[in-house]
Image (tube, rainbow, N blue to C red; front, side, top):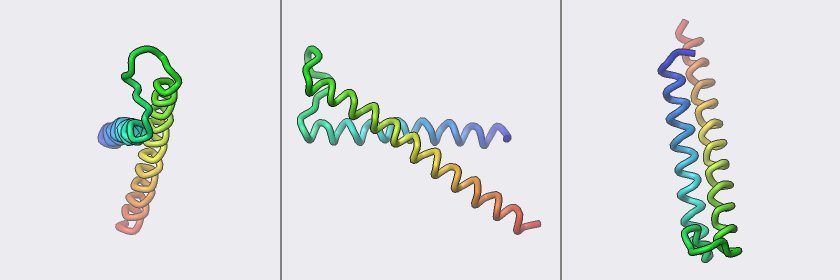
Length: 81
């Protein structure tokens, strides 16, 4: 792997994790789970868990998208010659 591929993989991972975390944060807020509430109430813990799960799901989606892009690029390079 070259450095450009590694950079793109790292950026995709970061965007996927942050994007998934933000989406799950706002979904949690919609359902009343506030991770920034004072103390560690049940709703706070549920919100934190949601953000963690959302970040992990976003990361996995980003990795699958990058794997598909790499496979498509390999096929295109193979067809070129």
